[in-house]
Amino acid sequence: MELDYKRPLAGMTLEELQRTVLGLGMSKFVAKQLADWIYNKRVTTFDEMVNISKANREKLAAQYAVGLSAPVDAQTSEDGTVKYLFDVDEGKKIETVMIPEDDRMTLCISSQKGCRMNCYFCMTGRQGYHGNLTACQIINQVLSVPEAADITNVVFMGMGEPLDNIEEVMKVIEIMTAPWGFAWSPKRITVSTVGVKPALQQLVESTQVHIAVSVHNAVHEERLSMMPLEKIYPIKEVLQMLSDYDFAHQRRLSIEYIMWQWFNDDIKHAEALRGIIPNEHVRVNLIRYHMIPDIAKLRTSSDERMTQFRDYLNSRGITCTIRRSRGEDISAACGMLAGKVKGTQAAKPQPTRTKR
Ligand code: SF4
Figure (cartoon, rainbow, N blue to C red):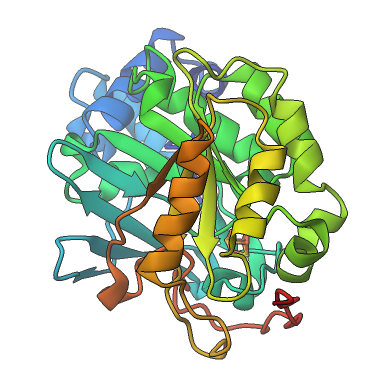
């Protein structure tokens, strides 16, 4: 009987590919050939895998798909940033953003369909949660954008909380860093999180990728009013846990801090942030807020406030920079990705405003 659904091979680790080919009665070596064709040569059909026998290609094609598919839409920003839309299952769409810079080509990838972290300020969070992406759907974003061959860095900062999908994200990191996969240095990969502490500890212990923690407010009650995960994993404890690991050498730990006028941008907040930063090796990135529909009350801080905040931290030995904003005109900037997903609207908590 012919199978309606063919399992994709893209997204499988070498071990999974080996199990697959052995199960079809082929030599284990075919798994290495498959990994090379999919992860290095980025082919989309079995017919192109010419060093695999025709009989084996037919056997594979009868039950499996390669699993790579091109984006269905693209929008280019005035600044050169490109937002790609990928079709995933059940008609859902996800977004991937290519950010070209002088000598870098950074791809910002999604890890979930929507997100269940429900951060007040985030467009993705407001779309609700529609499930995890598979390793295939995640790695497909890296392999199938037109600029795939030129990507220098990947950041897990698109739709979803990567550490809420730790198993598939770990597989993708393995594919990107293993000699049989992309053979990339882990320094080319950054995983961003709002602080899912146990999964973060697992990631830090089992990989060497860079970590970016979305703090956005170091005052517990105020952060809680914007980011519900603060209730389960207070950011202070998350950063405390990270202080046990080495971020002084090859690996980087950065703090992401979106700045909102009146909410988190005065010196009291800079002091609070300084108080939870574990050591001088941590870098702070200040990010302008991009207004999204329905949240008119949140506005980005002025340049002056951002500069004061940065200077305060710099003067106390903390490396802090104001990050350049990219892709705002095509809603590709931080917190603006929505994937045009239709679904349940997330609940809308009200943020605690700074008392002034
Ligand atoms: S900011 Fe990140 S974790 Fe929070 S809702 Fe948006 S995608 Fe999810």
